[in-house]
Amino acid sequence: MSQKPQHEISACPGCAEPLESGDRFCGACGHDLAAVPAAAPEPDRPTVAIGTPVNWPEPPPREPGSLSTATQHPGDLPGTDSGGRDLPTPAVRMDGPPRAEAPEPAAPEGDFTLAAPDPRAAAQLATPAAGTKLCVACRAGAVDPDGYCENCGHAQPRERDHMEQELSTVAAVSDRGLRHHRNEDAFAVSATALPDGSLASLAIVCDGVSSATRPDEASAAAARAAGQSLLIALPRGTHPQQAMHEAIVAASEAVNSLAEEPGPDGMEHDQHRHQNAPACTIVGAVVADGLLIVGWVGDSRAYWVPDDRTSPPARLTQDDSWAAQMVATGLMNEAEAYADARAHAITGWLGADAYELEPHTAAFKPDRPGVVVVCTDGLWNYAEAADEMARVVPADAAGRPLHGAQVLVGHALDGGGHDNVTVALLPFALSPQGAGSA
Image 1 (cartoon, rainbow, N blue to C red):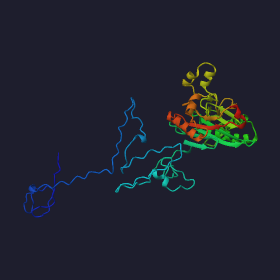
Image 2 (image 1 turned 90 degrees about the horizontal axis):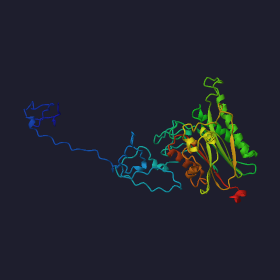
Image 3 (image 1 turned 90 degrees about the vertical axis):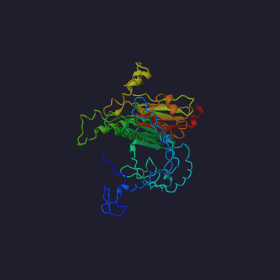
Image 4 (image 1 turned 120 degrees about the vertical axis):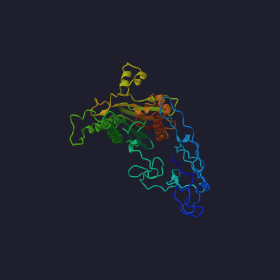
């Protein structure tokens, strides 16, 4: 094995004659080069860390049978950054108003400048122009036409991956969940005036049938048609229960029309349009004039949760599903039916290949204030019974419906998020004439 010499000299120390590599004697004066003392080694210059190193914790142990360790969250990792400052606390949404931030300490002399703006300094950036979309990750950079943040490079979610809408009397949130590649749910929330000037609030929630073609289009068409139908009927003085029935019929017609659309070749496929046609479920609620109206087809649900949690909550809808049929006929109890693999097979839906349309509607007159939860099975799978749903609905949901809907969607995601999750909350306040009946 060859070895490199410990040191090399380029000129003879006796006569300064240039030397070649490997010479043992000077060719000009005969100086013994082996007698030349070794040059002092060049001092070591190790890489110096800037600031105090981060003391990362030991990774959690692997779970039996798992190939990876348990998930760690940013808040679990203590330490400092390269300037010796404490690592920033991960951003969280606070229930109260934002508090003033303490100024950042000055960076030590010689510290490097960040190549991109620090997301923590987002509040100091100029207000973006109207219509500019900010990054959901750093909240600082604008989003380019390709859907990436110009500040941190984070890819942005598609529009339907997460949707929120809030009015003064109703709010809704829809999320793709953690397992599905797209969001096949849709919702419509609105408010309108009745002929006497009183306010009516409404919410429609639809869940696309994943085994059907174009389920996302079906749910969007149904929610849009039902919401528009209610906004036309209620101001005319149509009874809310009749208006809900008509809205479900309008939604059904909108979904049916999707099967009539031409195919990619421009030809209508009459012989196939009723096979696996676009389909969805629907559930809706209207709060108007002291009444609570619900309507549905399929297994999306509505729940009643009173503000006074000592009063009993209630489920207001009955699923069109295999499990519900087993319970209704007495062949199984509820626990057995919903534990069966066939539990979520629906027996009613909107679509050209559905059985005869049978919209369900019901009217209630609550004697106390509360909130109506209108949701897809992406939520109620994690809070199925009425008392379970009441436990996860925030106590202030009637006063903060958007926050309440966000909490419920978060509950489903924390539970696994196996399906798309959509929930709308409608606060119900007693009308003056009904105040004495509580």
